Length: 394
Image (cartoon, rainbow, N blue to C red; front, side, top):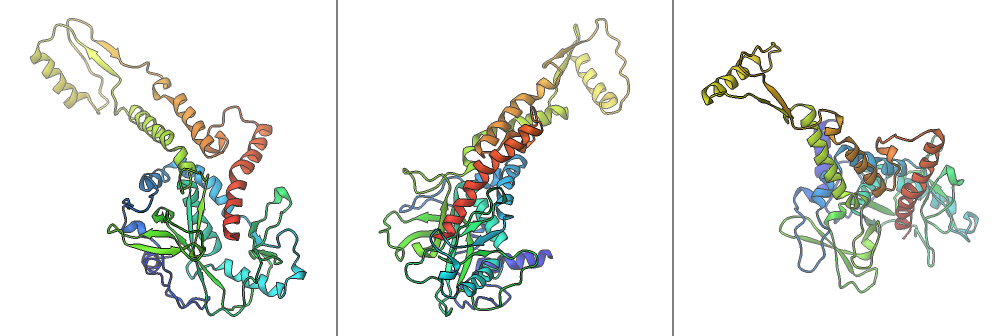
């Protein structure tokens, strides 16, 4: 893809349109803004509760350690072979037109909107969930679709394949088993699709504290510019996903938020070690006795002009032998490597990952590595994947 095409695609997302005709046949444009952070500094509102420091969180998410931890979780979940299948108590045979519904939902989730595949949609939402504890998807129903997606009393469910657990099942329909098409599977026929799902910047979403609990009443506000221009969204128009929900705040708590101060400390220690290793920070001095200020000044100029950076051997002719004063030990301990390793372990704990995922490979062998891999899958990947699945189900 050329850079011009990428820029045009970004602006199409901002405008809510696509250059290609929408396969879903949805005439109504999306209501949320695709890239509100271009115009918005996330200033506070008087009637809404903002998410703190989204800029700093995303800036830290671009550092190597944080990016490695985020990708360990995000890529595993987005790369799963997701499927739709009946909830407990239902079978595909008991659902009217079950096979047709499976094909419809397969096509819908393979292309949730004109610009994204399911994987690209999931990666964007998972990024926000892990970084800030907020993930948002705008749900746009196609009014012209002539096949009720779910009848009265039906409760769909969305799930993922997990080879380690024998592919347990969830579904979006009470009797449809859907998996995103893999190798050798035929695509569903082209037809109008029931939904369009748009990824939304979760940091731009504000809560309506006076929401009455109705799915058709105002619950969310999206702030799209510095003038606090707001887009009002009903409860059934937005999927808002919270990681680590709490009672004292309507917002979630992201893993990067937990590790924020630790990553800041690591970056400071890393910068200090980098300057020290590159001799940007001088760790010694020369002590010369009985020199007049004039001799001292001439010695400095001579050293800078003739010796420094040339590789020549300096020859000094003074009455007393120069003495070298060291400010540090002159060893790797000056780089504070053990302190950096400790901080990496804390960051890994904040992301529910074993330390060797972030490069700390001390005391790791074949047996312990296998156990830690299983622990990371159970503690970090499965809960986040189920959170996404349950949110898509609702």
